[in-house]
Length: 183
Image (spheres, rainbow, N blue to C red):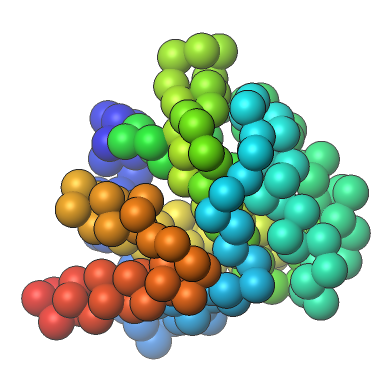
C-alpha cells in the first residue's frame, strides 16, 4: 500500500464517517454493494484506459447510473488528476459525480497487470466506484472500506484467485466478517 493510501486509510478510520455508524447512509460492508453480475474476472484490457472502460461498462445498465457517458468521463478525468493505484496490484478508479443516484460499484480483474500512473504502477484488480457528489461521507466511507478490505496480503491473494464472481463475493464476505469480528 502506498504512503498516501495508508495515510488516507488512517484518516478515514479516525473520521466521524467511519467510526460512527449512526451517521452513515452507506452500509459499512462492501459486500452489500457487490452484485456478482457486475464482477468480471477476465478483462482482456492491456492498458489503463481500456481497463477502466471495461470494468465501468458493467455499470452501464445499472438503474442508479443516470448518465453512463458522463460517469465514464468523470472516471477518466479523476484518473488523470492523480493515481488510482493503491499498490499491491490494486486500482480504485472512482468519481464523485452527478451522474449516479447512489453508490455504484463494479469490479474487474485483468488477465495481465495493466500500467497506470505514467508507467510507475500496475494493477490487475480494479474497483470502479461512483458516488453522488451530494454524499461526500459515503464516498469517504467506501474508499476507506475498500482500503481496509485489501490491506491483508493473504486476503488480496484469495480475491485474485477467485474463479467466479460468486466466489469473489463469498471471499469478500468472509474477509469482512473476520474483520468485523476482530474490531
